[in-house]
Amino acid sequence: KDGAVDADERAKTSGLLNALHMEYGLRTVVAFEGALTYEAFEARHVREWEVTRKEQALAGVNVLRAVAEQLPGGSPETPLSQLEGMSQEELLRFCRRSVTAGVEALLRQHQEILREGRRQGDGDKIAEQGNSKFAQGGEVLREAKFGKMEDFTTGLVGKIGLPDPRLMDAMMREHCMRGDSKVAFSPGNYD
Image 1 (cartoon, rainbow, N blue to C red):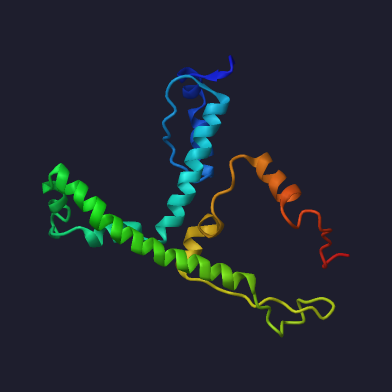
Image 2: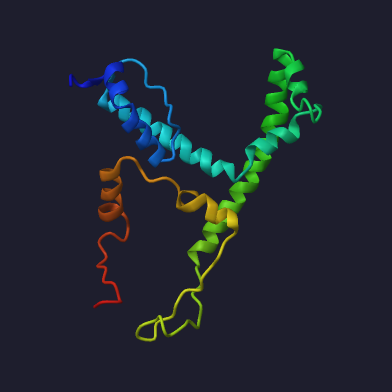
């Protein structure tokens, strides 16, 4: 109403905000305290979206396992007892040496996987023979690739990530700014 979103306005629209966060796969509780301008609110929302996308991408990298592998001691009943017993100095040393080295090694492996995937993705091979029942004009169909059950359960968001919450900006980039945006498109199935 006055260019800022205050606590009362947030309380009145909390259901809508939670629905929006759930739609984008974000946490439903994001700290938006104090009066915020729309720009500040949008910046925080976009930042949460960016962090959530990275968090989802890193879930497959298994950073937690890399940390867990470095943590000494513990037992099945109290797996983090060694962590609990560390002094501040020991914890700092542990994080700087062991955790950093373990996470760095894991990220280096994943970096190479990403680079190799990009190299292979640039040279997508189209199957030489397709099912002509579904092809038109002698064109060749792409070979279908199937994934694991995990791919199915993570859904589209797990495969391509969350949509950009700045919808108009995303549409502008997609339809007007990408390299192929000026190339005429004509779907072959109803020309």
